[in-house]
Image (cartoon, rainbow, N blue to C red; front, side, top):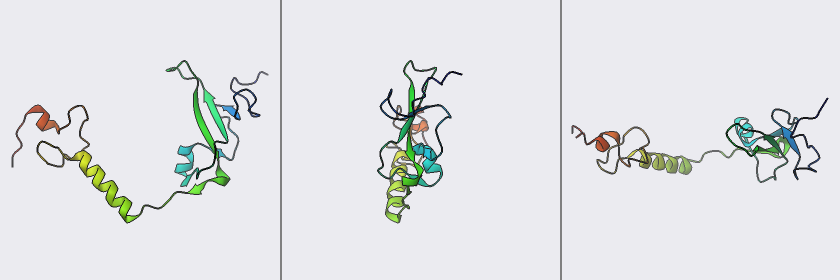
Length: 124
């Protein structure tokens, strides 16, 4: 039986322990998997990586893995952070032409809400 292409648990070939898609050992997770568990890497270095070949790219794709036992809890959202996030999102929804909250993030290529971009006057 042959070994999978990206199998290098010692890190000799790729410089860091490397596993193929869906073959990472228990105790290692990606950032996204950690976040789903309410955790974050917490400053720890990359413990391993997953490599796989993508149809879109000629070079292999990589996902970095972190140790679960060294992960820290996600920081709680403070009221000041929540207010800043609300203000930033409100600014992304406010049309600079008519100064109304569009209810959606304005398209960057238009820079205004859809009615202003189409030249449709809004009823007051």
